[in-house]
Length: 383
Image (cartoon, rainbow, N blue to C red):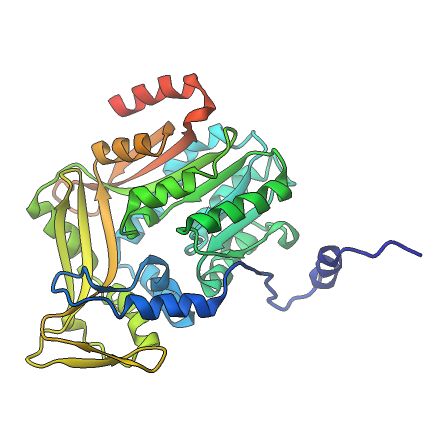
């Protein structure tokens, strides 16, 4: 009797010459649990500062409505942060590329986004490693489908080497499970994990998220981290950071989309507030809130068909982002036992007057990678 053909090989053959837009997806979580989490977060305490009810990071992109809203925002020419990021990434990546292009790395993309940056990385790395795997990871299956089209088609990356994984990578147990699956998939081959698009800044505790990611890095692995940066830390600059996001209506439509699609709250963009502040004297924090600034309470129906009351002045935090100083980045990486192998920083060039904002791309190694990396790190932070 012939050996049975593994289902993956049969699927590869079945989809190989089909023009229909099939996409394979490995689902790592029960979606009803995610809906319960979102519902619980929207039952938070009353707060006038965005520290009670909230839409936590991954839920901003969760579902088809928020995914479409995100795609629209990224294509808005007035969304200057996104525009500058897309323009600078290729320049930054070219300087990082020599550290990883010949090492036989596989790519694990945490938070797939539009897929444009993954396309750039895959195009370069696959030249010397045609057998590499591409594993995009995101909490939103819709984002995975949208974000993987660009690298697969644009870089002509083989579908048989792509494994999208639906998973909330901010949860430590999830990352442990992902690491075990990856080890079975690639063995001792090195992995390049990427967290680009200033995704780190969207989490309430950026240090906790970075620590969660670091715990799965082996000595041979690397983490590519892209963050928004600032050279000034004062209230005027914090206000300017908040105003950056306030300039585009498409971004406001995106940050309110999770409320639109998961509650019956009628969204008036005039009630969306963009608040900038200096955080811990080494970063700028921008909180984007919906606030009940009417003269009466508002009732909101939740996904489980229960209601919560939003008193006068109550808020729902819709989104969190940051701009980092070098001091903050050094503190975060040292706390998470990460050593920079390469760091490239550039300032935004879209304004007439000098701008304190920019983007920084860091290639990080776990401390266990050796003393040579530590010596280089001292030089990098001194720049």
